[in-house]
Length: 155
Image 1 (cartoon, one colour):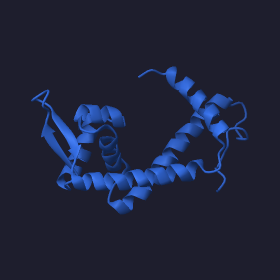
Image 2: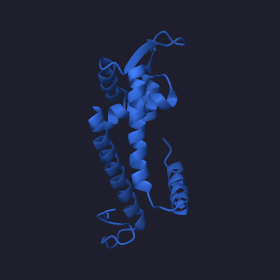
Image 3: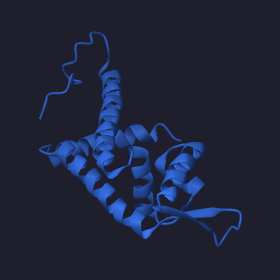
């Protein structure tokens, strides 16, 4: 595995607190992970954004656009472009919500569900590559720390 450009414990950043280096590293990790997954989805004709829609609908079932946008963590207007593209390709369909006639639910078509399984497989492969060889105890400590930090920044 290639060595990253910097590690928080030996970064040549005099005077910069470890907490600042951690936040920088998290940002870099998120960017690199997103780029890797986006690259892996390209052969499927998808981007990270469209793949995320398929994954979310697989994980959550039928959702309104508002629910889906919240789940993915993007603005509704950005989601509309992704949904329109996936609908035009026959991967997603809009159906009227039985609870609210003003709202549409988004659901996967059969073709969308098949492609979503491939998206999930690529995501699992990237995850497995990323975490290969890291002891569970280290991951548990990291997870506890990140969870604590997350609770300090409510939505």
